[in-house]
Amino acid sequence: MLIVLTLLPVIPFILLMIFMLPSLMAYTEADIPPSLIGTLIIGFVIAFLLAIILGAFSMGYLLRILRGEIPLPEVTGFGRMFVDGIKLLVIEVIYLIPVMIILAITAGAALLSALPILMSMPAEPDLEALMPVLMPIIGGVIAGVLIAVIVAILLWLLAVVGVVRFARTGKIGEAFNFSAILATIGKIGWGSYILALIIVVVIVAVVQVILGIIAYILSFIPYIDFIIMILISPFIMVFMHRYICLLYNSAGETVSSQATNSL
Image (cartoon, rainbow, N blue to C red):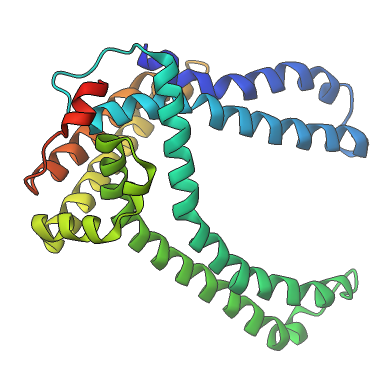
């Protein structure tokens, strides 16, 4: 069932390719009409939004793991899973807003300032002459991205505990109860907390590399990389969320009675 939930977000893109591929194959790359390109872009946006919505089912199940239920909960109650997943999606979007604002103000502003220069460039521009003009813009983009990455990491440290608080209380506001979040991290110990998150990221990265190597060795099998991803992804996600659950519990937190009753 977890494999099925993992497959759900992929379905819109599969349907998009099924419907659009015959039209694309009727033209060469140079002859594709702009209307077809526009249709493809709109279809991709719709497929992306549908994928996010369908991904709410698996996100809702992972919240059950964060509640601390042992053994792993059954994959049932799809309506509740979907609602919880949508709530989690809202929380993640809110946490991303500061990062998006920073990117828009810094990197976005730098790119906008470069547009007049790029629009006025000849067909064969003298890049050496343009570099003194473009370097401050490039520097602004890089600085903006670096600032956004740093802010994203800091927010991620808070969001990990915030999401567990939401999972166990059922209240979206608890995901942004920063005083309680900081208190929980303080009980774990900032050093231990950050090290634990680094460890889980490294473990998952190593597993992904190993799976990539296996997929490369078995590349003679069609779509083997996609098959491996679908089969292994549920195990990786369950492992990560159980790991985070135990990390949260190490602060002395327990499953709240409200969360227990809602399971």
